[in-house]
Amino acid sequence: MKTLQLADIARGLGASPRIWVFSAAMAIAGVAQAAGVEIEVWHTLNGPNKAEFEKLAKKYNKEQKDVTVKLRGFDDARALQTAAQDAIKKKTGPNLIQLEDNRSPDVVSEHKAILPLYQLLAKYPIKDLNWFLPGTSSFIRDSKGRLLAFPWMAEVPVMYYNLDAYKKAGLDPNKPAATWADLQAELLKLRDVANLDCPYASSKQVEVHLENLAPVNKQLYTSNDNGLTTSKTAPVLKFDTLYMRHIALMVSWKRSLLFTESSDDSKSDKLFADGKCGVLTSGSGAAGTFMHTRNLKFGVAPLPYYPQATKDAGRPFVSGSALWAVNGHPQAQEKATADFLAWLSKPVNAAEWHQQTGYLPLTDAAFRASDVSFYNKVPGAKALVDSLRGNLASTSRGFRMAHYDRIQPILNSELNQALAGTTPPVAALNKASDQAKKIAQQR
Image: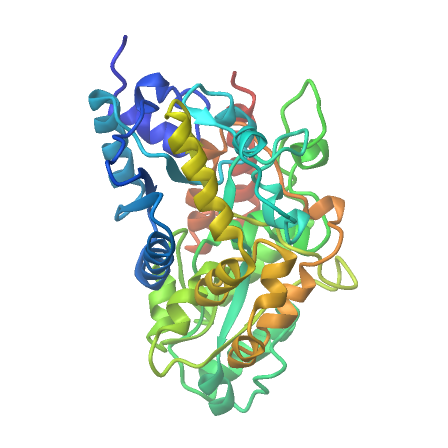
């Protein structure tokens, strides 16, 4: 059999269709332990979120003696990719592996190395499993609505704001801006009254300023009903006047030193945690770090919207990462894997995970089990979670796009060019759209 190279592994873990040739070799069983069944979980969590996952795994191991869960953490996706390549060579592999949303979950699930979660749960059902909201797990369901992986790290992009900085600037910390225009007025005060060198920063800039600009303003991100409608033609990005207006505004904020830090990773999260930035847009999972940062008082709010586009804000896409079951393990390990996922789904455990990390609660019961005091500590947190309940609008169900793992870096590059003033916003968006179209049409 042909040996897969690191480049191939990297593509697969970034969710390209061809790589999930983890093959049966990757899925060969782990070693059974004399004192029960052992299962292994690979993940890329870090900081307080990693510590919380380790805490829950230890709690599970102590509560029963039949199964032992071993967590193996990696610094980043590249490190996990390297380990995955090594696992193929040694014909070993984990039972669960954390993978980022690739916008093509159906493709991932079709590979022999993957055991779709709905198949695992058909053998070993989780009692009274009632997913909290369709949106919590929609990003990891197939076209038939079947659950493909465990959405343990589901999150949405949000706006964080520093309570002390707001008070210093004379702003009401209980009423953060709901629109981009109102946010500009607040950033001016954070800059000129609170004397912040970093009024606004953004992590995950493609997710915030491109992907979710559409659903928050109740528009489609791509053609073909966000790629959810079957069509002979590949979906294309819909960068209309809303996008031109928004990116032009962000460029003007850059020039006026209102928007000083941005990247498509989580670097700006640390600046906010250190109290250097007044406002941050990032994923809700960053709350885990912020809640465990001494002397940081913050609130959370939905992403701003444009009243010219919609009367009220729509809901952002739920995304994040999930735990995928790896195929080919003995029946005892499959059963143990399902048991561990069932335990994580229990309201008390799922509620703790939600409260300690900022990831979305898995079930309605988990939301109800959350301590009221938790929501009181973080202004806006309960209102934000409440806003995600109920039926999803067609524009907020998520999107599907082939080869998006290759498209996203292009979007990030062109966005950087626009924000740096190197390329006009219209030209940058058109170039990004044209390149994305070519890649999405490839077979």
